Length: 351
Ligand code: NAD
Image 1 (tube, protein in one colour):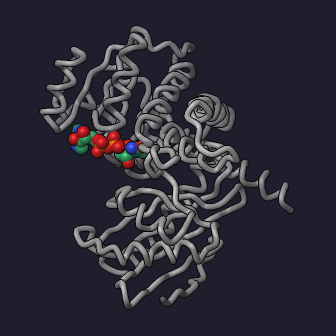
Image 2 (cartoon, rainbow, N blue to C red):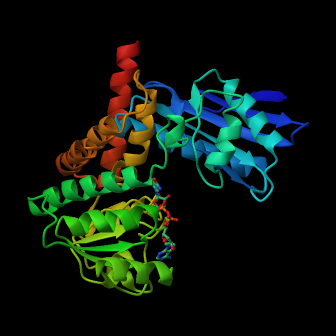
Image 3 (spheres, rainbow, N blue to C red):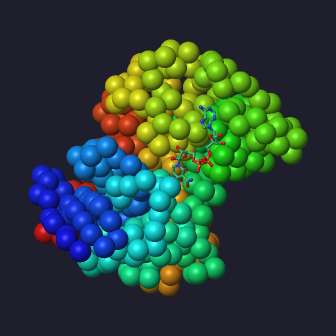
Protein backbone atom coordinates (compact mmCIF):
# COMPACT_ATOMS: atom_id res chain seq x y z
CA UNK A 1 0.00 0.00 0.00
CA UNK A 2 1.46 3.32 -1.08
CA UNK A 3 0.37 6.30 1.04
CA UNK A 4 1.60 9.74 -0.02
CA UNK A 5 1.05 13.03 1.74
CA UNK A 6 -0.04 15.95 -0.47
CA UNK A 7 0.72 19.44 0.75
CA UNK A 8 -2.37 21.64 0.55
CA UNK A 9 -2.47 25.12 2.11
CA UNK A 10 -5.05 25.49 4.85
CA UNK A 11 -5.45 21.74 5.42
CA UNK A 12 -3.86 19.82 8.27
CA UNK A 13 -3.31 16.65 6.28
CA UNK A 14 -4.24 15.39 2.84
CA UNK A 15 -3.22 11.86 1.87
CA UNK A 16 -3.49 9.70 -1.20
CA UNK A 17 -3.56 5.89 -1.18
CA UNK A 18 -2.78 3.63 -4.11
CA UNK A 19 -2.97 -0.05 -3.45
CA UNK A 20 -2.08 -2.38 -6.31
CA UNK A 21 -3.47 -5.55 -4.74
CA UNK A 22 -7.00 -4.25 -4.10
CA UNK A 23 -7.04 -1.55 -6.78
CA UNK A 24 -7.81 1.12 -4.15
CA UNK A 25 -7.25 4.71 -5.25
CA UNK A 26 -8.49 7.06 -2.54
CA UNK A 27 -7.95 10.40 -0.83
CA UNK A 28 -8.51 11.50 2.74
CA UNK A 29 -8.53 15.17 3.75
CA UNK A 30 -8.24 16.20 7.37
CA UNK A 31 -9.14 19.87 7.19
CA UNK A 32 -9.06 20.92 10.82
CA UNK A 33 -8.88 19.14 14.18
CA UNK A 34 -8.89 22.21 16.44
CA UNK A 35 -12.21 21.20 17.98
CA UNK A 36 -11.69 17.43 17.84
CA UNK A 37 -10.96 14.51 15.50
CA UNK A 38 -12.03 15.11 11.90
CA UNK A 39 -15.31 13.31 11.24
CA UNK A 40 -16.79 13.12 7.77
CA UNK A 41 -18.29 10.57 5.42
CA UNK A 42 -16.69 8.35 2.82
CA UNK A 43 -18.02 8.60 -0.71
CA UNK A 44 -17.30 6.59 -3.83
CA UNK A 45 -17.60 8.10 -7.30
CA UNK A 46 -16.12 7.44 -10.74
CA UNK A 47 -14.28 10.79 -10.75
CA UNK A 48 -12.83 11.66 -14.15
CA UNK A 49 -9.45 12.40 -12.56
CA UNK A 50 -7.66 12.52 -9.24
CA UNK A 51 -7.75 16.33 -9.44
CA UNK A 52 -11.53 16.26 -9.60
CA UNK A 53 -11.61 13.94 -6.57
CA UNK A 54 -9.16 16.20 -4.73
CA UNK A 55 -11.35 19.29 -5.32
CA UNK A 56 -14.33 17.37 -3.95
CA UNK A 57 -12.59 16.02 -0.85
CA UNK A 58 -11.09 19.42 0.00
CA UNK A 59 -14.42 21.26 -0.38
CA UNK A 60 -16.35 18.64 1.58
CA UNK A 61 -13.86 18.32 4.44
CA UNK A 62 -13.77 22.09 4.94
CA UNK A 63 -17.56 22.08 4.98
CA UNK A 64 -17.50 19.45 7.73
CA UNK A 65 -15.23 21.64 9.89
CA UNK A 66 -17.75 24.48 9.67
CA UNK A 67 -20.74 22.23 10.18
CA UNK A 68 -19.29 20.59 13.28
CA UNK A 69 -18.02 23.90 14.69
CA UNK A 70 -21.50 25.46 14.55
CA UNK A 71 -23.17 22.24 15.74
CA UNK A 72 -20.71 22.15 18.65
CA UNK A 73 -20.10 18.43 18.31
CA UNK A 74 -16.54 18.51 19.66
CA UNK A 75 -15.35 17.27 16.28
CA UNK A 76 -13.29 18.65 13.45
CA UNK A 77 -13.78 18.29 9.72
CA UNK A 78 -12.60 15.61 7.33
CA UNK A 79 -13.78 13.56 4.38
CA UNK A 80 -12.66 10.65 2.23
CA UNK A 81 -13.28 9.74 -1.39
CA UNK A 82 -12.73 6.48 -3.23
CA UNK A 83 -12.15 6.94 -6.94
CA UNK A 84 -14.03 4.13 -8.63
CA UNK A 85 -17.24 2.72 -9.99
CA UNK A 86 -19.69 2.18 -7.11
CA UNK A 87 -21.24 -0.70 -9.04
CA UNK A 88 -18.02 -2.66 -8.42
CA UNK A 89 -17.25 -3.09 -4.75
CA UNK A 90 -14.85 -5.96 -3.97
CA UNK A 91 -14.37 -6.64 -0.28
CA UNK A 92 -10.59 -6.20 -0.65
CA UNK A 93 -11.15 -2.57 -1.66
CA UNK A 94 -12.89 -1.76 1.62
CA UNK A 95 -10.40 -3.75 3.68
CA UNK A 96 -7.64 -1.65 2.10
CA UNK A 97 -9.69 1.50 2.75
CA UNK A 98 -9.94 0.43 6.39
CA UNK A 99 -6.15 0.20 6.61
CA UNK A 100 -5.85 3.60 4.95
CA UNK A 101 -8.26 5.19 7.46
CA UNK A 102 -6.42 3.44 10.29
CA UNK A 103 -3.07 4.85 9.13
CA UNK A 104 -4.26 8.28 10.35
CA UNK A 105 -4.50 6.96 13.91
CA UNK A 106 -7.97 8.38 14.66
CA UNK A 107 -7.40 11.94 13.46
CA UNK A 108 -9.94 11.04 10.74
CA UNK A 109 -13.17 9.18 11.61
CA UNK A 110 -15.27 7.91 8.77
CA UNK A 111 -19.02 7.42 8.18
CA UNK A 112 -21.51 6.77 5.37
CA UNK A 113 -21.79 9.13 2.42
CA UNK A 114 -22.67 8.93 -1.27
CA UNK A 115 -22.62 5.35 -2.65
CA UNK A 116 -21.36 3.87 0.60
CA UNK A 117 -23.63 1.55 2.54
CA UNK A 118 -23.45 0.26 6.11
CA UNK A 119 -22.36 -3.13 4.71
CA UNK A 120 -19.29 -1.44 3.14
CA UNK A 121 -18.44 0.27 6.43
CA UNK A 122 -18.73 -3.04 8.25
CA UNK A 123 -15.90 -4.31 6.04
CA UNK A 124 -13.89 -1.11 6.68
CA UNK A 125 -14.41 -1.69 10.39
CA UNK A 126 -12.56 -5.02 10.22
CA UNK A 127 -9.37 -3.00 9.74
CA UNK A 128 -10.02 0.13 11.81
CA UNK A 129 -12.02 1.24 14.83
CA UNK A 130 -12.41 4.74 13.38
CA UNK A 131 -15.84 4.14 11.86
CA UNK A 132 -19.16 5.66 12.99
CA UNK A 133 -22.81 5.42 11.97
CA UNK A 134 -23.01 1.62 11.94
CA UNK A 135 -26.14 -0.31 12.89
CA UNK A 136 -27.81 0.46 16.22
CA UNK A 137 -27.66 -3.26 17.11
CA UNK A 138 -23.88 -2.98 16.92
CA UNK A 139 -23.93 -0.24 19.59
CA UNK A 140 -23.55 2.48 17.01
CA UNK A 141 -25.84 5.44 16.27
CA UNK A 142 -27.64 3.89 13.25
CA UNK A 143 -29.58 5.66 10.50
CA UNK A 144 -29.16 9.46 10.91
CA UNK A 145 -32.27 10.50 8.94
CA UNK A 146 -34.82 10.64 11.81
CA UNK A 147 -32.37 12.79 13.80
CA UNK A 148 -31.77 15.09 10.86
CA UNK A 149 -35.55 15.43 10.54
CA UNK A 150 -35.97 16.25 14.22
CA UNK A 151 -33.15 18.81 14.01
CA UNK A 152 -34.85 20.33 11.02
CA UNK A 153 -38.10 20.67 12.97
CA UNK A 154 -36.25 22.41 15.80
CA UNK A 155 -34.56 24.62 13.21
CA UNK A 156 -37.87 25.56 11.59
CA UNK A 157 -39.17 26.60 15.01
CA UNK A 158 -36.08 28.75 15.59
CA UNK A 159 -36.51 30.36 12.18
CA UNK A 160 -40.21 31.03 12.79
CA UNK A 161 -39.22 32.67 16.07
CA UNK A 162 -36.90 35.02 14.22
CA UNK A 163 -39.29 35.76 11.36
CA UNK A 164 -42.62 35.94 13.21
CA UNK A 165 -41.70 36.36 16.90
CA UNK A 166 -43.09 32.90 17.82
CA UNK A 167 -41.73 29.38 17.26
CA UNK A 168 -45.23 27.92 17.04
CA UNK A 169 -45.82 25.77 13.94
CA UNK A 170 -49.58 25.75 14.56
CA UNK A 171 -51.41 27.32 11.64
CA UNK A 172 -48.20 27.82 9.62
CA UNK A 173 -48.10 26.48 6.08
CA UNK A 174 -44.97 24.50 5.24
CA UNK A 175 -44.15 23.41 1.71
CA UNK A 176 -41.72 20.45 1.62
CA UNK A 177 -39.88 19.55 -1.55
CA UNK A 178 -38.73 15.93 -1.22
CA UNK A 179 -40.52 13.62 1.20
CA UNK A 180 -37.81 10.98 1.42
CA UNK A 181 -36.10 9.70 4.56
CA UNK A 182 -35.77 13.16 6.10
CA UNK A 183 -38.52 15.20 4.41
CA UNK A 184 -41.17 12.52 5.03
CA UNK A 185 -40.43 12.34 8.73
CA UNK A 186 -40.29 16.13 8.93
CA UNK A 187 -43.76 16.33 7.35
CA UNK A 188 -45.12 14.04 10.06
CA UNK A 189 -43.48 16.04 12.87
CA UNK A 190 -44.83 19.32 11.49
CA UNK A 191 -48.31 17.96 11.03
CA UNK A 192 -48.35 16.74 14.65
CA UNK A 193 -47.44 20.27 15.73
CA UNK A 194 -50.42 21.73 13.88
CA UNK A 195 -48.77 22.97 10.68
CA UNK A 196 -50.51 22.72 7.34
CA UNK A 197 -48.12 20.60 5.26
CA UNK A 198 -47.93 20.74 1.47
CA UNK A 199 -45.79 18.05 -0.13
CA UNK A 200 -44.03 17.79 -3.46
CA UNK A 201 -41.94 14.91 -4.78
CA UNK A 202 -41.12 13.40 -8.17
CA UNK A 203 -41.87 9.97 -6.71
CA UNK A 204 -45.64 9.76 -7.24
CA UNK A 205 -46.05 6.54 -5.31
CA UNK A 206 -44.47 8.13 -2.26
CA UNK A 207 -46.70 11.21 -2.61
CA UNK A 208 -49.82 9.05 -2.83
CA UNK A 209 -48.83 7.04 0.24
CA UNK A 210 -48.27 10.22 2.26
CA UNK A 211 -51.61 11.65 1.10
CA UNK A 212 -53.43 8.45 2.07
CA UNK A 213 -51.69 8.17 5.44
CA UNK A 214 -51.77 11.81 6.48
CA UNK A 215 -54.14 13.70 4.21
CA UNK A 216 -51.45 16.16 3.10
CA UNK A 217 -52.07 18.46 0.16
CA UNK A 218 -49.66 17.93 -2.72
CA UNK A 219 -48.36 20.12 -5.53
CA UNK A 220 -46.52 19.29 -8.72
CA UNK A 221 -42.72 19.64 -8.59
CA UNK A 222 -42.59 21.94 -11.59
CA UNK A 223 -43.17 25.48 -10.38
CA UNK A 224 -43.75 24.35 -6.79
CA UNK A 225 -41.53 27.14 -5.49
CA UNK A 226 -44.24 29.71 -6.38
CA UNK A 227 -46.82 28.10 -4.09
CA UNK A 228 -47.68 30.54 -1.26
CA UNK A 229 -46.54 29.30 2.17
CA UNK A 230 -44.90 30.53 5.37
CA UNK A 231 -41.99 28.08 5.18
CA UNK A 232 -40.39 26.51 2.14
CA UNK A 233 -38.40 23.41 3.15
CA UNK A 234 -36.07 22.09 0.42
CA UNK A 235 -35.48 18.44 1.38
CA UNK A 236 -34.62 16.83 -1.95
CA UNK A 237 -31.41 17.97 -3.61
CA UNK A 238 -28.94 20.86 -3.84
CA UNK A 239 -28.91 24.16 -5.76
CA UNK A 240 -32.68 24.67 -5.62
CA UNK A 241 -32.20 28.29 -4.53
CA UNK A 242 -31.07 29.97 -7.72
CA UNK A 243 -31.70 32.80 -10.22
CA UNK A 244 -34.83 31.08 -11.53
CA UNK A 245 -36.49 30.01 -8.28
CA UNK A 246 -35.70 32.86 -5.86
CA UNK A 247 -37.74 35.54 -7.70
CA UNK A 248 -40.74 33.17 -7.66
CA UNK A 249 -40.64 32.21 -3.98
CA UNK A 250 -43.84 33.12 -2.12
CA UNK A 251 -42.64 32.31 1.41
CA UNK A 252 -41.22 34.24 4.38
CA UNK A 253 -38.76 31.55 5.41
CA UNK A 254 -36.56 28.92 3.71
CA UNK A 255 -35.67 26.16 6.16
CA UNK A 256 -35.03 22.60 4.96
CA UNK A 257 -32.53 19.75 5.24
CA UNK A 258 -31.07 19.52 1.71
CA UNK A 259 -27.32 20.05 1.39
CA UNK A 260 -25.92 22.96 -0.64
CA UNK A 261 -29.26 24.67 -1.22
CA UNK A 262 -27.74 27.91 -2.53
CA UNK A 263 -26.66 27.41 -6.16
CA UNK A 264 -24.01 30.08 -5.52
CA UNK A 265 -23.11 32.09 -2.42
CA UNK A 266 -24.61 35.24 -3.97
CA UNK A 267 -28.04 33.62 -3.80
CA UNK A 268 -27.93 34.09 -0.03
CA UNK A 269 -27.80 37.83 -0.63
CA UNK A 270 -30.65 37.51 -3.14
CA UNK A 271 -32.85 35.90 -0.49
CA UNK A 272 -31.93 38.63 1.98
CA UNK A 273 -32.81 41.31 -0.59
CA UNK A 274 -36.21 39.68 -1.03
CA UNK A 275 -36.79 39.74 2.74
CA UNK A 276 -36.80 35.93 2.96
CA UNK A 277 -35.13 34.49 6.04
CA UNK A 278 -32.84 31.58 5.13
CA UNK A 279 -31.82 28.98 7.71
CA UNK A 280 -28.33 28.00 6.46
CA UNK A 281 -28.45 24.37 5.35
CA UNK A 282 -25.45 23.11 7.25
CA UNK A 283 -26.76 24.57 10.51
CA UNK A 284 -30.33 23.27 10.27
CA UNK A 285 -29.42 19.82 8.90
CA UNK A 286 -26.86 19.01 11.63
CA UNK A 287 -29.13 16.59 13.56
CA UNK A 288 -27.45 13.59 11.92
CA UNK A 289 -23.91 14.64 12.76
CA UNK A 290 -24.89 15.59 16.30
CA UNK A 291 -26.39 12.10 16.68
CA UNK A 292 -23.25 10.40 15.36
CA UNK A 293 -21.00 12.54 17.58
CA UNK A 294 -22.68 11.05 20.65
CA UNK A 295 -20.86 7.79 19.79
CA UNK A 296 -17.63 9.57 20.72
CA UNK A 297 -18.76 10.42 24.27
CA UNK A 298 -17.17 8.39 27.09
CA UNK A 299 -20.34 6.32 27.75
CA UNK A 300 -20.86 5.61 24.05
CA UNK A 301 -24.08 6.16 22.10
CA UNK A 302 -27.24 7.09 23.97
CA UNK A 303 -30.37 8.23 22.15
CA UNK A 304 -31.75 10.52 24.85
CA UNK A 305 -28.41 12.37 24.98
CA UNK A 306 -28.55 12.72 21.19
CA UNK A 307 -32.09 14.15 21.27
CA UNK A 308 -31.10 16.66 23.97
CA UNK A 309 -28.06 17.76 22.00
CA UNK A 310 -30.06 18.17 18.79
CA UNK A 311 -32.07 20.86 20.62
CA UNK A 312 -28.92 23.02 20.39
CA UNK A 313 -29.81 23.70 16.73
CA UNK A 314 -32.38 26.16 18.10
CA UNK A 315 -29.70 28.12 19.94
CA UNK A 316 -27.17 27.86 17.09
CA UNK A 317 -29.62 29.28 14.56
CA UNK A 318 -30.60 32.06 16.98
CA UNK A 319 -26.92 32.99 17.16
CA UNK A 320 -26.60 32.92 13.36
CA UNK A 321 -29.64 35.20 13.00
CA UNK A 322 -28.27 37.58 15.63
CA UNK A 323 -24.95 37.88 13.78
CA UNK A 324 -26.81 38.41 10.49
CA UNK A 325 -28.92 41.17 12.09
CA UNK A 326 -26.18 43.00 13.93
CA UNK A 327 -23.63 42.79 11.13
CA UNK A 328 -26.13 43.17 8.29
CA UNK A 329 -24.86 40.10 6.40
CA UNK A 330 -26.77 37.22 4.75
CA UNK A 331 -27.41 34.34 7.11
CA UNK A 332 -25.10 31.90 5.28
CA UNK A 333 -22.22 34.35 5.83
CA UNK A 334 -23.29 34.72 9.46
CA UNK A 335 -23.07 30.92 9.88
CA UNK A 336 -19.52 30.92 8.52
CA UNK A 337 -18.62 33.77 10.90
CA UNK A 338 -20.01 31.80 13.85
CA UNK A 339 -17.96 28.74 12.81
CA UNK A 340 -14.79 30.82 12.42
CA UNK A 341 -15.29 32.44 15.82
CA UNK A 342 -15.71 29.05 17.49
CA UNK A 343 -12.57 27.82 15.76
CA UNK A 344 -10.67 30.91 16.93
CA UNK A 345 -11.77 30.27 20.51
CA UNK A 346 -10.65 26.65 20.14
CA UNK A 347 -7.26 27.67 18.73
CA UNK A 348 -6.73 30.21 21.52
CA UNK A 349 -7.58 27.57 24.14
CA UNK A 350 -5.04 25.16 22.62
CA UNK A 351 -2.24 27.76 22.27
P1 NAD B 1 -33.88 10.61 0.14
O1 NAD B 1 -33.22 10.11 -1.09
O2 NAD B 1 -34.41 9.63 1.13
O3 NAD B 1 -35.10 11.57 -0.26
C1 NAD B 1 -35.03 12.51 -1.27
C2 NAD B 1 -36.43 12.67 -1.83
O4 NAD B 1 -36.41 13.75 -2.76
C3 NAD B 1 -36.92 11.44 -2.60
O5 NAD B 1 -38.23 11.09 -2.16
C4 NAD B 1 -36.89 11.88 -4.06
O6 NAD B 1 -37.89 11.26 -4.84
C5 NAD B 1 -37.14 13.37 -3.92
N1 NAD B 1 -36.68 14.17 -5.05
C6 NAD B 1 -35.53 14.06 -5.76
N2 NAD B 1 -35.47 15.01 -6.72
C7 NAD B 1 -36.61 15.74 -6.60
C8 NAD B 1 -37.12 16.86 -7.28
N3 NAD B 1 -36.49 17.41 -8.29
N4 NAD B 1 -38.31 17.36 -6.87
C9 NAD B 1 -39.00 16.81 -5.85
N5 NAD B 1 -38.55 15.74 -5.16
C10 NAD B 1 -37.38 15.22 -5.53
O7 NAD B 1 -32.82 11.60 0.81
P2 NAD B 1 -32.77 12.13 2.32
O8 NAD B 1 -31.87 11.26 3.12
O9 NAD B 1 -34.15 12.40 2.80
O10 NAD B 1 -31.98 13.50 2.12
C11 NAD B 1 -32.61 14.62 1.53
C12 NAD B 1 -31.61 15.77 1.45
O11 NAD B 1 -31.12 16.08 2.75
C13 NAD B 1 -30.37 15.50 0.60
O12 NAD B 1 -29.96 16.72 0.00
C14 NAD B 1 -29.33 15.09 1.63
O13 NAD B 1 -28.02 15.33 1.18
C15 NAD B 1 -29.69 16.01 2.78
N6 NAD B 1 -29.26 15.54 4.08
C16 NAD B 1 -29.68 14.33 4.53
C17 NAD B 1 -29.24 13.90 5.80
C18 NAD B 1 -29.71 12.57 6.35
O14 NAD B 1 -29.53 12.33 7.55
N7 NAD B 1 -30.32 11.71 5.54
C19 NAD B 1 -28.40 14.70 6.58
C20 NAD B 1 -28.01 15.95 6.09
C21 NAD B 1 -28.45 16.36 4.84
